Each structure stands twice: as C-alpha cells, then as structure tokens.
Amino acid sequence: MGEVVLGKKVGNKAMLYGAIAGTIPDLDVFASHFTDVVTTLEIHRGFSHSIVFAVLFAPVLGYLVSLFEKSAHWKQWAYLFFWGFLTHSLLDAHTTWGTQLFWPFDLRVAYKNIFVIDPLYTLPLLIGVILTMFQKRTSPKRKKYNQMGLIISSSYLLLTIVLKGITYFKFEEALKDQGISYAEMETKPTALNSILWSANVKTPDSFLIGYYSLFDTEPIRFFEYPKNHHLLEALEGDEKIKRMIKISKGWYTISEENGALYFNDLRFGTLSIDPGASNFVFSYKIEVKNGTVEFTETQKGTRDAKKLIGQLWQRIKGN
Image (cartoon, rainbow, N blue to C red; front, side, top):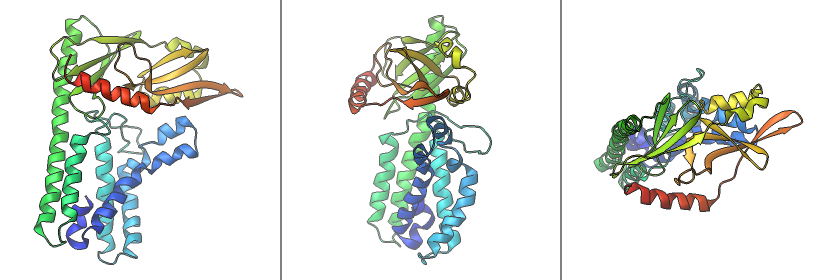
C-alpha cells in the first residue's frame, strides 16, 4: 500500500514506510508486559486496529515523517499511513480472532475465511514488492508488478470466501445426514492453507470438532468435547471468568488436570487433529491467588507445531 500511495514519488522509501504502517497496529502485543492475561486478550486487535485509530494517528505520523522526509507533503505521508493502518485491520478481520474495526463499539469483526499465515496469500504480494524494488522510481513496471501482487493475493482472498461457503455446506450436510442437532456452527481454514477446513459445532452439553478437505471422499467425522462448564460453578461470579467467557464468545471448555482447572478457547482448535486431542492452541491455567483469579497461558513447544504441520499435510490430501 505504501507503493500504491507514494511509490512513484519517493521510490522504495514508500515501501519502507508502508511496512512500518502495516506493523504499528500489532504493537498492541506489548501490552502483555504491562497487564494481566485477560486484559491483554481484550486489548489485542482493539483500538490500534480500529478506523478511529487510522483517522487519528495517520495525520500525526504523516506530519512527523514529513519533518525529515521532504520528498512528499505531510498530507501524502498521512495518506500512506492511513491506508497502511486500515488495510492491515481489514485483512485481520478475515481471520479467526476478529478485529474491533468499529471501536469503541464492542464488536469484533471475524469472517474466518483465511488463516493468519497463508503462503498463497503472502507470496504473490512479496514477489510483486521484490520485483518492484528493482525498478526505477519512474518506471511503469513498478506499478505493474505491485498491482500484479495485489490482484493475485486479493483474488485468492476472495476465493477463500467461496471455499468457506462450499465447506460450510458440506459440514451442514454431514450434520444433517448423521442426525446431529446443534445450536450453532463456525468454520475456519486450518493452518497455512485453504483446502482443509474445520468446524466447531455447539450442542447442549458438548462441542463437536470436524475436519473436511476438498479432496475428501469419505463422510466427515465429528469428535466430541464435553463443555464441563459446571467445573466453574465456584468461580462463575468472578469478573475475570466472565471476561474470559466473553472473549471466547462462549466457545470454551473446562478441563481438569492434577487438581488444576484449565480454560480452553475452542475457536482455535488443538495442536493435533488426532481424535480427542486435548492440547488446545490456547489453554489457560486457572489459579486463585490471595482471593484473586489469575489466568496463565500454557506453553506450547515447537515439537507440537511440527507434528501438527505433518498431520495437516497428510489430512489435506483427503480422508
């Protein structure tokens, strides 16, 4: 986006400041060094990802950059930062976590049609930018290469919306065929691809998780995860417990291990696609210290991630 706005005028510096603008909203992750886990989760993709943030801070940063970058007017730099901020947030809205685009309204936009890391989206953009970098500032090829990357990646993003619709229908059909009644269903692509999709299904006493690949030939299988919400009865009135439930939008299970309770955010699934896998991507140990409820995120190892990638590669090829 930096190249689109100012590439012809300032050359590769436009990409540099475009990259900076595209990174700034994610600086909210540093909140974890100053606040508790629950507050950090609430802040993530909040104000810094909103339209309000883009409108307020783009002119400020545009003016500051113009003080030492005289090659463009401050309004042009502001325009660059505005589109860097806004497109970052709009893209994040397509992922699972959701984005508070309309802050201060308490509404997270989450289309859940693309994984937060997807090479098929990123590589066209990257190739387009690299090819553009080696062209002269006035060369018409700069615009051509940059647009090529944007068009291909954006077309892929639109394709994932179509694939979400197709796979949603497949899950819906499978639930009907198996006589499973449910209250709600959410679908999302698995890590690094848009071929293998997963579904979270809400039933009265449990959640079901199922997987469907576009190359599948056998019926979809669903695996049950008891809600175990009753395990929180003694703490259900606690403010932090209520906030965590709100953050998860009700998609959570409670598990007990060695006398300790764990809050598992079901929206992001598990680090394994084995039936009944319990190593959730986001799981938090619940502890009561001096009468205060504290959440501590459980640590994940690189071994788990490597195992998951191997499993996904096999499962993508069909059941």
